[in-house]
Length: 348
Image (cartoon, rainbow, N blue to C red):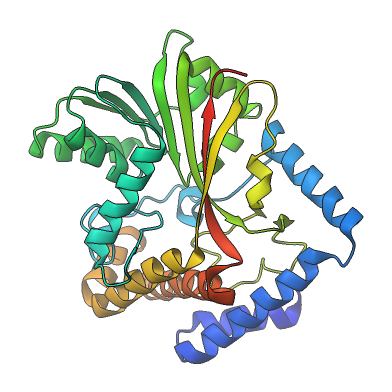
């Protein structure tokens, strides 16, 4: 990051720049990134895509899902209540008519993912990176005969999620804080689900082999993840590392839609789906509106985590992150940055 970029980044973090100017600057950064990602050379573009695919399957860091997580800082659970929907889903919602509120759109997205993952009764299901439990709780309510194991990267979150499950009277869920490679070979699942937390898988290396080892012979792995419609790139190489909001979540690598269609012999790609960026844009826009409206309770929640001196800075950083999502996914009417869904079978 150059001196100009650092100064610009600091300027936006003051919180005094109007949203219109912030969005215009982010739009420029995304416009520049797309031009750089194209490389104006089909051979060079293919070479980068090949390297990114290699990084994805060999354990290179794919994505830093949270700056706060990297700093071993855990946000209070009530933080998410003030700007997400009732399910507290930190994934793309779905707005089939555009008139849905956030709660309806969350449920629609969870239903679509469930259907495409071929969830049925009496299955043993593993969710990787369950967050605040949006998918797990939704499935446990709809499919009471299924058994769920949900992995979270936060030990503190386990007790919170267990309390929610108790309040909901759901006794078919086990929440654990473990790395995937800590699950023994005796653990076998009919379905494995990963909702926008591929970073957890990528840190393993040879993740496809690990997924296959955890699947029953006729099992399926369902992956949902943000991608670009046609270009895979490293954020640093396209100068997106200085994007305002990166201190919350920074995409180190952005795969393309095709990146997950080339698998090794461990898994077989059964089906794929594409979700327009317009759905993510609407999701992020609703998050942003609620975030801004609930400034005071959010500020107090951030004070619990960072203290009074840092709360203001983190409030601005989170707003910048949400604005960056709105800007990214609205680019070219949602045809550039999108969401890919992939269904893999254990039968190669």
